[in-house]
Length: 219
Image 1 (spheres, rainbow, N blue to C red):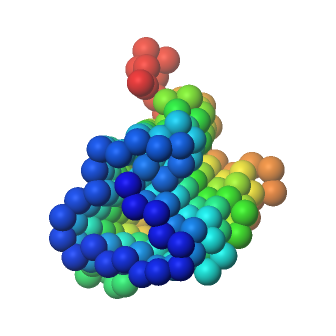
Image 2: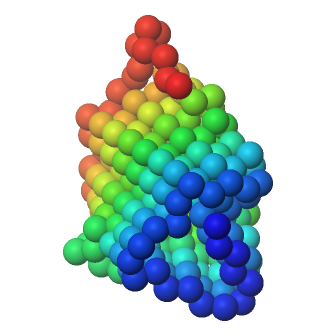
């Protein structure tokens, strides 16, 4: 894929697809800036973390405006693994960026946030992401911060708990937006808060989430 260490990369069109690595199959952002204006990061596979995108540097910034991160596969963070730095999904609610149909064998089908990572969602969607073994079909927080200002976390599936969101640690701030249509096999179809997680909901809707039947096996 693409490795960035201090520079700037803007993807206005085109695709980063079908790459293989240990971490960050599509994009590995150590430091610097990546802006996905249009185009796609898709069908990348890693044995570790961040099938589509891996952010580790303290000063790195990733902006997803109207493109898509989809059908990537990882152990944790099928679409995005955010260990440090900042990830911004949509500059405004008019933008239509998406993180969709990604798979994690462990935690965080769509997004995994650890350490000091900050994820801000101003619009767009995180949808149809899956964990095939653990928690957090859409989003998994093990630290850091997730701010949902607008947009949809919908139709994600967790093999265990937290179909939409699993909050193991860190802070999830819901200012608006919708968490809907998510399912889990165990607890919290929409959201599951455990350990030292802090979930604050000031507005928005958590609606229409459910539980997977024992006969429905996720793969």
